[in-house]
Image (cartoon, rainbow, N blue to C red):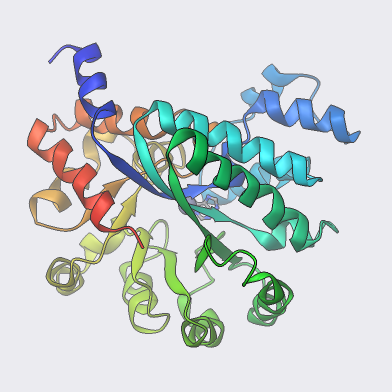
Length: 323
Ligand code: ADE
Ligand code: ZN
């Protein structure tokens, strides 16, 4: 298949994006524009020198830059503009539904109130439904390098807003530094979220071991696993994931940029798909990893020589795995 033809074929498949950090869609030029608007000083002379810093050796080396970049977000308008820019890109890639993660603690810890964050995200998502026909929801994600007590406190701050955003805030997630921050650390807050009726996802098996995937399922009652690529190290777990059709939200270009794999040709996405797992393709932090969802599909389609049927299956899996 010609590349252009492959691209329009994938673009035409109705797709859901289920693993996207909205703060990871902040393009370098928008970081500079918002820094100027909000009078925030950046430690980079210009857009090009910021982009030159996007050379990551592991998850933490990325997170350090990602949290620094998010510091330019101050007002409701900033959150709106960032989200709207993402939705336009997603629509152009043939995304019809998106479940967006955001990190409330990254903002509240800087003095941005949770009301500002919700208001900006929600106005863009509602506009996206009306003007672009994209349906969406929000995944309120806890930072796992912080304590469970801090996760509880953030949840408490946000709960008064639940009714106002009942159409959007459906779920909670767990992200940030995986190694050394196992799922069990957040068992109580996830149990509380389940009691409150929230759907649950968790990053696991990105850099951390397969046992974190199992614990995310057993201890956090996660309904989808973000990444999960290291599940392959545990055959019994693989069997469980297949039997229960637990969705894995895989992010190929992220795995490459963060050195989870050294070459996309070695990525296990196709193997997991062929074993009947509910694998999906997503972009994670597209502004930092060199591509939005269509670029991720294209990259694996080429590197792993995926058939049309497999591409259809991946898109179908994403639609089936929606909340
Ligand atoms: N936050 C943003 N991107 C992330 C990733 N790939 N893993 C964990 N936390 C994240
Ligand atoms: Zn992620």
